[in-house]
Length: 146
Image 1 (tube, one colour):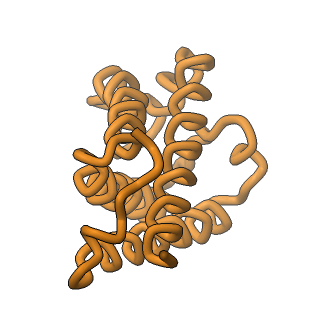
Image 2: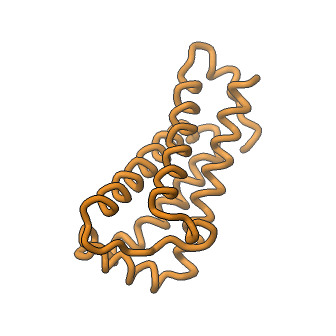
């Protein structure tokens, strides 16, 4: 019962996070694209990344909704959060210019606070993945979503 709750809660939080992040990027797409272009690591691929990131966030959100794809969604969430966090750490420690492409609620966070925020989601996602793989968990984790 507790396993089911944890997996559902983490999945729900990830859906909210990724959907909100994608919508924020789409609504302020030109600024998001410009800020990516100012990144010393992403400038050459800014246009592609500007489209790919919100698209991935929406796709991952959909995988987390459905029972058949939730495991894939948890792994994809973990990977995307790790990539985002790695990027933040590299930019914060090694870049001469720190772009500001966060929008909405997260706009007020410092870069270090953003890394902590992401790390909490990484930890929660890792916990959900571990619980998902516990013996007998597949029978107990029939989700209430679709």
